[in-house]
Image (tube, rainbow, N blue to C red; front, side, top):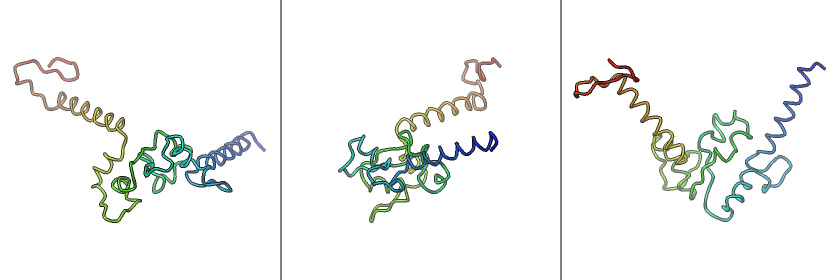
Length: 152
């Protein structure tokens, strides 16, 4: 066995072990309380409440099924939803009778944590400002206009 195949075999073993360790529900051959979902709910004090956990950036299914469990089932990708109705409004994988999901742009916005919303808004404002300075400002307001710090 060459060094390359030995390394790939060890990597494959590690990947399989991590996939099992970060299973959201019941791990293979395990108990449902051993899954990451239950452990996270327990750490957050949500066991016995109506709160649900939402995968906001990388979904559990759809295209997220290609992403390893040990990446998508991390706390940075999980958002607490107050109940199933709130979860159904932002995630069409859940349905509750009488609850219509938000339109897609609003689902994306409401389905992300506050920190991500602030970052998104900041990037949008910064890009808008740079675009205005580069293409929209004509300097007719009486002050000298600069484009990215250069005098015209």
